[in-house]
Length: 89
Image 1 (cartoon, helix red, strand yellow):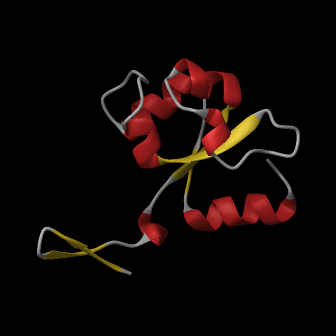
Image 2: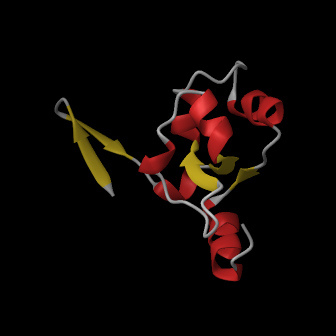
């Protein structure tokens, strides 16, 4: 997909994006509106992308550090799809 920004062409692929499965209460604690995200069947977890985490109030200087502090793993798109298809989240 190509996104046009200020007359510059930027190539951006969601396949390069990382994703995280986060407890809904933790999401609220770091300033995310949990109802805006895809939720697990039990409503306790949400899926966010790396930009959501980096733009949140979570502490840490990079994605890995923030995920570690929150006690969550980082998933590729392929890993996320596998979890969703298995219902394993």
